[in-house]
Length: 254
Image (cartoon, rainbow, N blue to C red; front, top):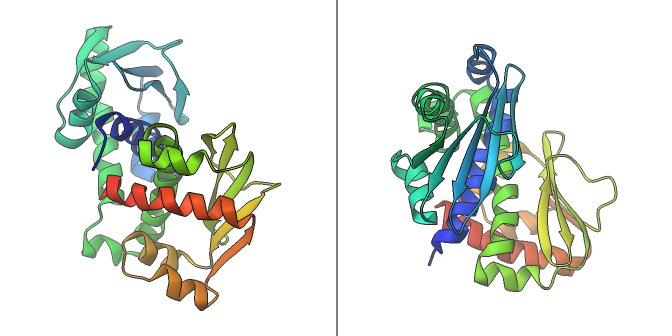
């Protein structure tokens, strides 16, 4: 059972937050940003849900909390309304600088999210391209990291697991490819998109092919653990609770 509010946070800090990384990884996305005439700071303000700003410049995209410095804003009356933007391309209410909202939403933003969707929901033919396959898996790793934190803070089942995680950093990643750090502080989770220097727990997949198979459900976590292809180290309790949240991530992102 998905909670609409929790789903909105997953869409914000898991899915749309991956635009930061898309604009670094994909040449077409980079070109879209470089073609901007001026910076666009697009705020999404969801009643009863997240409020965040995607800041687009020629250098790429960065997500910031709240609406400070936004040049335009789209408001949503409920988390379901925001989720409809992600699932069905139904926009919210332009509540600041409507002209820029509509121009950017129907132009660069839609182009970027279409590229992101192709990476996150790739076709079999897409995955035959090795470069695409690797970028798709890396972007999925970033989405999963953001979704873990979103659900740990908002989903009632995941919050139980988060409440059992002691303070510290959990390093998650794919060997030599990509790492994220889940930070637990007073049972609230946040994400840093880089490798932890002082992790209290580590979960690391030994190859990008393994990670992709685990993400799409074609490999067995237990079998790969027994084969030594997944490295677990540090505080087992932290890893156990992150894995419980990961089960919820799978349900939300299915």
